[in-house]
Length: 183
Image: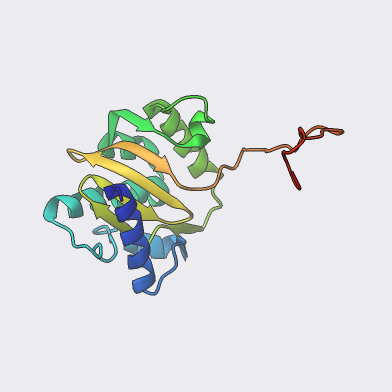
């Protein structure tokens, strides 16, 4: 099993062991402020343990989230925590047409996300697992980040594809003999 798969599984076990669900916690902005300031709350340590470098990588992800969603400053969050060569592998940016969304595309996406969020309340991820440079965060879905030298270099989104539409066969379609149901 890959280290990435183990990180995801370890994180899921951590969430269950802590008695929490994998969903983000719905809270008021005042509660979110307390999670982000004066220091960022990074949740429980990973079940496999964390060394100082791994704890620092996890803190980068939580601080980045706080700056975008609580402080409402995606520009500074990206400048501070995201590498200029950032690759966003999420289907929500690439729509399955290429391997990476760019730094600029991801920043624009976070601006749109932040501006479309309802005022007053927020949902923040409460838990993450870390294995070396890979940080797996559990919130609305699963987000996996690579943090290298203190900067986010990659992001994979484990959430469902919101813009995928799978169509059935056209009217009158019949599968070839021996294929399809009963074939």
